[in-house]
Structures are given as structure tokens and as C-alpha cells.
Length: 171
Image (cartoon, rainbow, N blue to C red):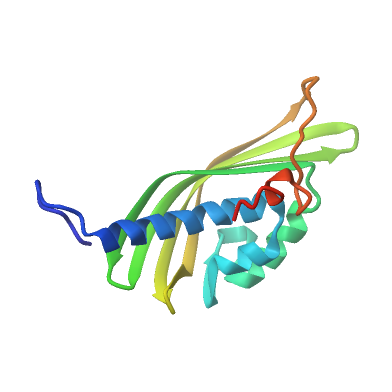
């Protein structure tokens, strides 16, 4: 892990690398919320591994295929990431990110909301100038499922490429 002495400047390349990795983490969340498999694939290297414990173990691309299928059964999705910590070693890095995933689904006449809190422990590499995940371990901290009643204001976002964000050229 690279450390910076008090009063010394952080090299610009380290700042750029941290920003690049953080943006890939954000793109992962967007891929989940928009059920955008192509964007999801771009987060992982071709030979990557994903370990989500009891729900999935396999390749990064395989995880995207699996999770997109699950997400298509949901009414709405929201993935949020915070507390991103990154340790750099040249063209390799490790990170820890805290996540909250909120998923809504219909169950008969009931609307159920699942919230899961956890962390991503990611191993990264820069290949061909592109940072992507080599290996992810998802640590599940806790969750809850509850029946909810929607408010009078309907959601205006979409879980696909018809979401308005695709028209304003958000990457």
C-alpha cells in the first residue's frame, strides 16, 4: 500500500487511477440499475472471478448474465456505493466499497422491498490502459425484507435503455 508523507503531494497518476477505479465502481451500480449487461461486462476483465457467496460463484461475465436475469423480475432497483477505499500498487489495486442494494418486487398482491447492506472487496488490474475487476468477493453484512405501500408519486426512471439518462449521454 502506498502512503503519502504529511506535507507531500499525491502524484497525479495516483489521483487519476483512484478516480478511474471509482468510476468503474459507479458504472457497475448503473449497470445493475439499468439492467445493462454490456456496461456490466465492461466492469470485469475477461478472465475475472466473482464470489457472491451462496447466491453466485463464477466468472464476472457469468455474474452479469445471472444478475440481469434476476433483476428483470423486479419492479425497481437502486444500488448505492459509498466509503470507497483504494490501495494502489502500480497497475494493480485492491478496494473496499460499502453498498446498499434496494430491490422491489411484486409477490401476489403485495409489494415487497428487499434491502441488503454489504461490501465489495475487489482486486483490480490495469490492462491496455483500462482498469477493471480481476476478482470480487461480496461480503453480506445484513438485509431486510418488508412489505411496503407506494406513495402517490410514481417512479419516473426505467430499468432499461429507455431510462432518460441514456438520452443525455451519461456514460
